[in-house]
Amino acid sequence: MSHEVTLSASPFDPVEAQRLFLAAADAGAVISFTGLARPTTRDGHPVTALVLESHRSLTLQSMDGIAAAAHARFAITASRVIHREGRILPGEPIVFVAAAAAHRRAAFEAADYMMDRLKSEAVFWKREEGPDGARWIEPTADDAADLARWHDADSTDAGGIDHVRD
Amino acid sequence: MAEFRPLDVELFGKLADPCGAAITISIPAAGCTASELRALVAAHDAGLGSLLTTTTVRFCINGRVAAESARVAPGDDVALLPPVSGG
Image (cartoon, rainbow over all chains, first blue to last red; front, side, top):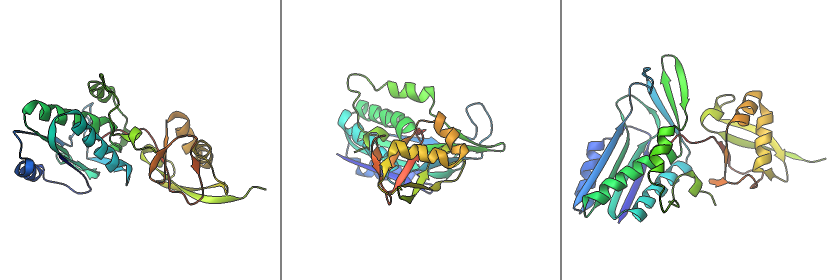
């Protein structure tokens, strides 16, 4: 069982990430997901860039905790997470998540779980820049609802900012 | 009379809008709590003071998320974090 988490300040190639993960996976099922920066805001205004601010230690710790929690929760044998930080242009990949398992269900669920938690709990502060200026993105109700899907019998999953305190 | 020492405080997300990503404030030489630090940061600038009345913040002291009661001493690596947005 291995997990690898990377915070990338420059653009990355999700196809290459997928190729490397597949080559090393040694599993019956591999799922991958790539998230791309959108060219418009939720209400349809143009976005010229998305800026993801990170913290030099807490951000990677929160990502690593989320991946570790996925391994504790699902029968996956390997995972890979790559997340951009800094200034991201529309169409550029922001996040790549992959999970490998003996059978597909665990891999699908682990990738879904990691994405829901990365989208709401990873330590980033997100700003959209457009022709009319910049705007900080606050956590949304949709993010909270996506996260709540996983809070059933065991809601003590590690990862996220609450789990990097002493 | 109490002695004071300078402390650099990093500000993340929208907390950096009024004064930039780092400010220097004075704290008691003997240190203070994280909660007292927030009040000192709020007193540093009216814009920051206003943001801090409406924003839940967490404290990062020497690389770890810390509670309101945690101690901050001159020389510590300190940051104020608004709610994260996720990636």
